Length: 193
Image (cartoon, rainbow, N blue to C red; front, side, top):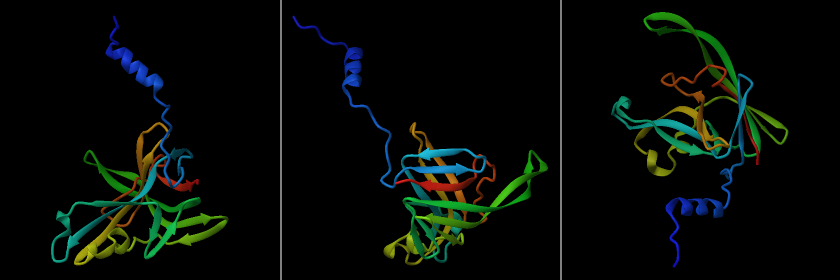
């Protein structure tokens, strides 16, 4: 007479016989996010995520929902910069602003991106932080008859332990504000092949 294996035994056998799962790797290589507080965080799967609004001409933009377009390329104005194997430094101007907290006005830090520096194979290029052209955000004929407004650029990805993380890199409009806190403010992206 054959004994039937119980479910816990079958589950344990499946775990022991399954190949070890490796951390997922992006085809773009690993990205290391360097923050203003001196810490860094590696992301295995990652993308640059452009948030934008698109609305029909003649309608109010306030009724549209933000849309995202993920890419592994840095879009600045009408130019595309591949960033695999490179580094991107983000330069800021820090300032103090006043915010209302619980009915009281308090001072809070603010940060505005003033420039980008792209380093590829020992060569450095200084870039202005321009919003990407609408052709990048909505390629082809999909943007015909629409007004397109870039809102922000984020980096999104997964840590080595599988935790999803995202960081706001820069805002293209006053409707979006990236955190100026050193633990949230990205100062450099380092992309390894």
